[in-house]
Image 1 (cartoon, one colour):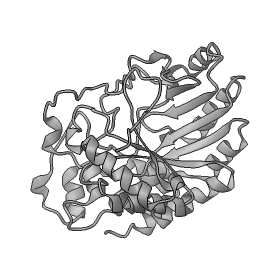
Image 2 (cartoon, rainbow, N blue to C red):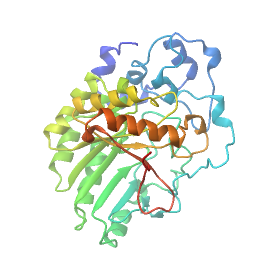
Image 3 (cartoon, helix red, strand yellow):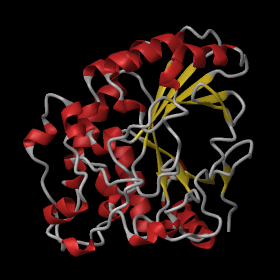
Length: 332
């Protein structure tokens, strides 16, 4: 494992750390002491990984579970039946203004296509962000929300909403708070995991001061991602009264064993984060090699139930286009 440099951890600007992310597979492999002959390129969804996150990968290990999540490979170019560009029906559920409405009481705003890291299994890796983001017309998006009186929770998603500046995010949150029926604001983000410096004092103030009950859902898949640096970054959010949850994706050769999943839950709880969802892989084109068979997922869930207290066992779910909610994995 590479020790992250002090400059990476103490940067005065998380934007600088985003801008200097590794975007060349050969550079990443060289940094890890691995042969560059295995470097592959996907120009449609290029590699992007912050140097902090690269520093958590094990040097000399081509099977490192964090590396597997970000390194393009030839398997992504295979055409696999059932794997599509819109696996969870986002485009069918788009109601305009970058808003997606799938479930009762909730609406999701795709506020940006930018992200600090490009995860190869991302269910929005083919999403047409240029045509469907709320930032183009945030006032229009909120006007649409006002015409949905049953929606009391707004989810900010992307991309990653925390790739926006604090000033831009504050403007979005303040405007959302003016929508009378909204009660909760949920933020789905991977940035604190791959770039802990993103959790600024200003961000904590923004989420702590809004009249909306803010909830932050981070995305960590492996215990090696849940570092003391991450725990320290999240502490001010907890101090501001922000509930912290985690959603993970079950990924072949990354976290598809009971020991890894149990340690992920334990590590998250030590960092003040409650395990929330463990998603079965969304069938997005280019990610079939990450799939874990349903029978294996059921066995892993049963193993977790047998060894962890219930509050540390995430709900294992599948998202199906057109369904009225997440579908829980049926028990063995």
